[in-house]
Length: 546
Image 1: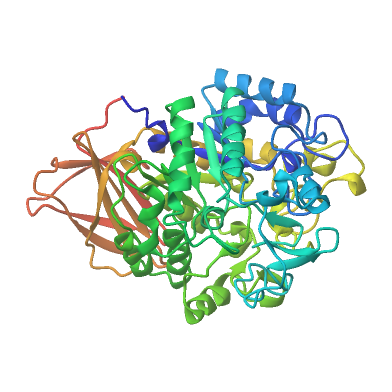
Image 2: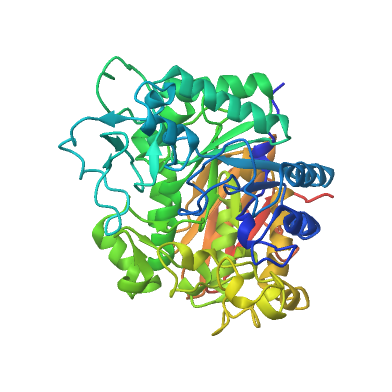
């Protein structure tokens, strides 16, 4: 029997170097992370997703890897990693890690060998051209920072392809030896206790470039190869793909249930932000309806913000402008690459507790599995003085002690500065302060996560939209194994009354999981509900039994 544990998981994304420093060198590490496992467990997290921790020049937040089989010495050792996974498992927490195999650092020994010797086996690990291709300026990922996708290497005497930065040379996935190496990487970390992988930039991993590659009929078979290998090594391990693609292309990544088990729902995320900006439910409703049918073992990963920019590239220019006006009006400071916002979510809504709870309530109840980025649980802010995507990557704010309790190092030795000014300063926004406040976002999040885990219907069930007659209200119903839950969210600042048209065979009363009240359903099978501005309700149909 398949173990689909991820259907009712709560995933927590961590960048180790900015989470907790145990040795006072200004850089977070595995020992520090291990010390914080009880906090993570108390939050209700069931799966930790680790951003890259491999040896790296760290020019791109660790996504420029120089060794797939080790831990960056700044972050610890393989022994520290194994001890971390052991202690996580003791607390019932699984671990997934980033699989960054669409490119390597240009400092990777494979690339260095490929440049030095045309006859090296590593030459064909990468994609080369004797002349600069005519389309070298097309498909730029980082406008304003990146000028080309082909760069000349003097030592190699040829141009190499890089979809991303020029220090990240793309691997040649058509080479069987490269694919065999990827299998070894997967097998290595599975043997050390991980429960799966977040596949970085999945569409670009299977992007076929260069000469003499017309014989590749279906590059998605490469994803199937990885899944097949993974399943043989560990049957309950998962692949969570980063694939920001149009709805018509999504099903290719799930296959017939034999490729990715999970995909981030970028379509829902972008339209959720648009709905929040408009204070209207329609964009989110249409995005949910646009999602294709996926295999039974498939699952959506729902999120508000991740560690990159808030990408809005699947929305029109006019829709992006609407979002900018509400959440990021200074495009020079708050936008990046012409397509996304480089802010954390709390400052986008001016720290409004009602809007924060509304958004995260939506994330927890939308069909799929919630993914929380570290610091979201306390409403951390951003530092727009930092470059590129760094504003939303500042160290975790644990306390009002120096450096937010993240490190005992001098402030100028920190991997990134902590936020020291304004309403999002670590002196005001931190774990200790919020633990002591029963009305804090942290305490709300802990309760909401616990409630989400007690409502597996949101992760497992079939869903449908419930008509309310109010354009600002989203109501949806999820059913699984005869259990039914209903979530109602008012995206407007204005209070309202709505009437829910319920299914004929639903029970005759609703239990409010937010306020612990029961409601008798009238004879006309409708339920009249009053919602405050940015208010929400979670209901269980019928009684609620512990």
